[in-house]
Image 1 (tube, rainbow, N blue to C red):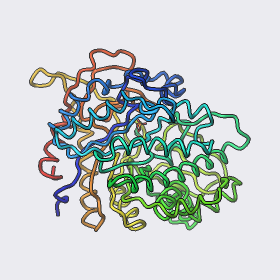
Image 2: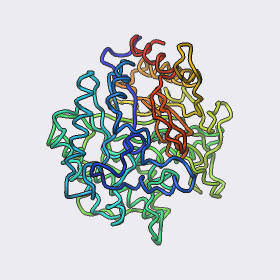
Image 3: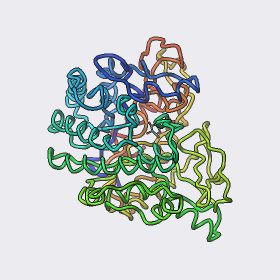
Image 4: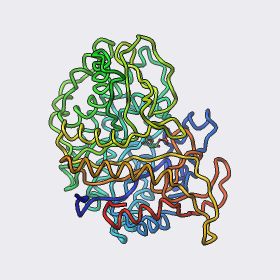
Length: 466
Ligand code: BGP
């Protein structure tokens, strides 16, 4: 069996990780522009990033050369509304119209994330997502997007990896670092506000446009470390707390009962205003977008908090509920992320079984320290067979999941071009297109096609066979 004829092959990026022009053309600052993660780890800042803001025409034409049917990118909230609310930056609107013009020219479908980690700093200064008024700010931002771009965009994603911002906000640089009495309660309050905001925005989208809209969490299926029933329960806890809390609220409009009982025992039930649950109930996503890098293996909690690894794909634990352990049946990439293509099929089946909504994969990929070499034609390239192997194996399992009956309508791996990794800067690359800069040396920012560029081009031209 093949992939459906109109399957959306493409790749992803996010604004703050590739655009650059972080303080130009009327853009306001976002939390990522001042993120302590970049300062503390001494990794690439996002002032220039991959300079996609200035080079999007070249980048999109390279995507077209690869045969992309779709490009998933995010709009920078603070480029549209420099203060998060209020005055609209017309230059920002004009910029994204130019990006859309370019995509249209090449018949590439835009898949647009509204908010990918980069909350406007002006909102963070007022408490960010802990402050209930950020719900209105997000709704206002969405209404600006729908009124300017509503007739040009068919697929919107609300919030990228809301679950990772709650679980790994420190590692990602999205945390507010506010001094609060109960930090965990504050996080789950932020989560509640995001859920309500997302529901309002999904409703608004359906009212103002004919587009489709969906959430975009990071989903990992969870394996028990052993068949011991306690480990099975730990896996069920982990899945509820990490995955279903977010998707049940988005799709069914209610809190997952296992996650709720976890919040209750921890004393972190958020303040829920009258009418909030009705708002959650009355909104419906049209599809589920999700990012998959790896699954997770857990054992029953020994009650200790294990060392928090500064990485969103590793080291999750909830003392008393589960703790993650390495899965020795799997290989790891050079950053310790487990490589689990069969688990990808499993994960797609699990999400499909649970929600029966069409799915699009909006991230998946291999981060590596790519090395530029001179190719046969004397043009620099990267021989990234490791990336090709990774993607080939995942695409195969996605095809098998489709054969299993899963409705998957697109695949946008991370990332279209090299960009700034969340906490490894330019040292960890994912792109099909190499961006010629180092950690702190901007060089000439030239674009070079990696070996995976040609490989993916051929995959797309044969609709998924490689
Ligand atoms: C996801 C984020 C992306 C991206 C990716 C890879 O969690 O949505 O923004 O960066 O992970 O992560 P990293 O850059 O840490 O390797």
